[in-house]
Image (cartoon, rainbow, N blue to C red; front, top):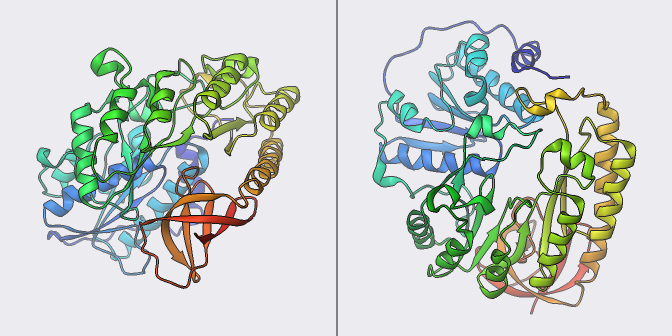
Length: 457
């Protein structure tokens, strides 16, 4: 069953009082609130937008937590799955209500949901002053009487802690996975030239960034459009030469036709974390074929073994999708056995939902929400056991830890095996002062399913 955005909007409106228009003032304000929803790639877009606005003398508040609102609000939406769409719609409606009360004067919406469903949103939520797509930042700025500054490309504000930054190396995706609507929202793959990325890395290092987290819809495709060959290895080597950058981490590497030379670079370059995020999605050959993943179970298994053989001590993060329309109970059991056998260091699980205009629409979505929930819970329970086992092996070992924050009297950091927000954390009790963003050496003395506990060496 496909739930249309128009239907989601109508459902959400049931929980909101009728929004009545109110005459707004016509003067320009210099304060903007920017709300970012969705993934780290969206976050980078917002950071670029904030820098442009700041150059145009706007004061920007990102993801405000207080009750006081600026007169201009921009919502950067996500449209990836139903839950993300619902969150985006509910956020838009919340601010539309504030606008009807006169609490804000202008409301703009951008991002993936706006890119894909602009016509529906305009028809259902007329309180929004304008909708913009994922690549329409100049038009959004123009609406604010601000000028898009080309010389600022590669410079941005950081909404993350100042010692790490998400680093987007390309936009869009050329893959044709049957369940995924990302190409409909982000378009075809477009690589950022190497020289621009090196310059951006230098700018970030000058701001105090020590860790670059490389992101894209598909890292391993990097360079094919610009250079007619995959260039991720060259890019990694050039980023390693940037002074001040100490960790480089790879996210979202597509497994099919994986460029194996990248593994040698990860192994040989000390700055690159022995960590790779490689979403497999499934392991049943039948389901992989229906998902149009362009890879088989054997090829997936061989790739994981190749990664582990080439990079000693590597940590592998993967993602699985359960409840795909053609996934049988036998397919799911095969997936569970595969996860048990492979013992991934990190694993996330998504539940399938039909996406409009994707080829998976050809399959009837016959798996109930209850079964999808059960399968997701079962798979994560397996991973919890694996994670505890792997964490307990680390007791007594020493690790280089990057300190992210202080929380309830403890310092919280990460090892090379851990990416922010999605992976394990290391908790350190230490009486003396530790500076956020510094590296320390710590010895693990206890472990839980997704947390480690350590002391400074």
